Length: 282
Image (cartoon, rainbow, N blue to C red; front, side, top):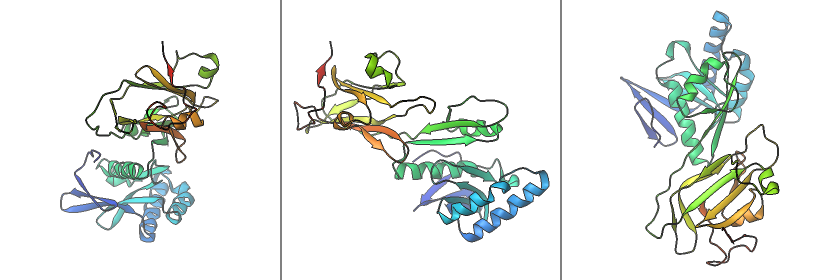
């Protein structure tokens, strides 16, 4: 279970957070919740011109598409999130801020991301003053962080796997820009992973973590992956190619990432694809 900064217990598909004598629920919104939220959003806007009242159409639409989550204190929806996983909008009523309600909404979204096989959460922080909150929860900026404006950021949804007993394998998985395969250069990867790994009886390689590849938003071209097991290159190609799929790479159409939980058996140990390079490194 993901750690929270406030005491909680998970009940079915929502959170119940104990705060004193009152329970704080994180649940899918109802029409009554929406009406209450719009009420305090309008009041805050009239008071100081701030908040998300100007986004009311998006918030109303989120209820219709089942993408509106609320945190309730008693019967009152004192905060909300638009977006089932990564938040498009998160807002807490002014008098309820600093009490862990934003944390509860975020953690509920992370649990849904794990359940729905989402690998990355991408957000836009506006105003930029809100960036410090998201940074505390593992989000990394992918755009310049300035005093004014907005900050684009993302967080990898990590998954750990228990490994069975067995023969260990030396695994390296790296992700590159597209030019790497044309220049035959491996000097500038986006990321390199060396997970703990064990050989399974069926020839597959089990990894102790999900390895996730993401192409930077500001880079053109396709993501390239290189998989090496015990000095044998299993693939070095675009992650979308059949050769990568034959090596165990999975394309996640939900968030545009590529990932591996296991490496497929090599041609010498199973009926692996003939597209695998199986090249022994010098």
